[in-house]
Picture 1 (cartoon, rainbow, N blue to C red):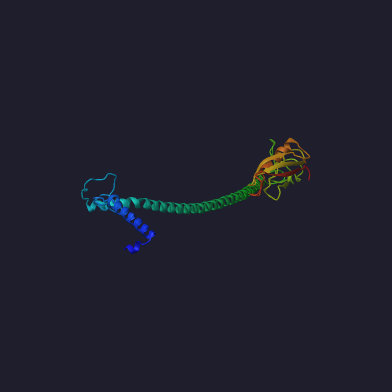
Picture 2: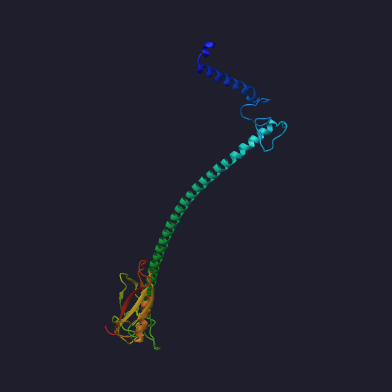
Length: 294
């Protein structure tokens, strides 16, 4: 052994090694690892409990009473129901909204269709009413004309059956005097009401109302000892009726009151062709020429 310590460095190393080993042994006995009794446990700490489920914030010190399986199932069913109810309500609400929207669109379409049909029916009804009105006016004008013609024939028949005079066999008479007889002219018109002149064209008319023609043209009663031209301004509605007559307007050559009255009466009795496209007050003229001679 001395053979290993034959040099100074070896002896120094042996001394140093002995000192270090001695220090290690002393530190093991006095400074060694502390022992815990009971020994420290390793792993993750877990809460004290008696079941796999639980709720609340109060830690029991002893095992809880046993909860029946039925109660647990009821609680689970309630949780599932509470969770599913909002979804079901939401789906039902969406379905109701979809149905309401669809019904609303269908009702709007149906209403539009009904409104269109109603408007078309109303237009057709108005056209038919207007057509019927024109037809009635036409028939009324024709009936009036026939009635006037019948009245003229009846009057003529009455004249033919008048009183006897020195040159004929008729009976009766007509005139505005207090003396019996048939006042007038042998060349006159049996349907005329005038008593003056020589049977000429007293009261003949010139009618002007655009493209509308007169249906009935009564002559003025020629009861005046006057002659000349009387122009009457007229206003005619769509049915052909003269609603206003103003005699003696520009163009007249005689404005004697007697002529004006007879011209106005004749103009108001005149009827024209109905025209629904005409203005409600279409303006025209009638010219009456009064003559005392042939």
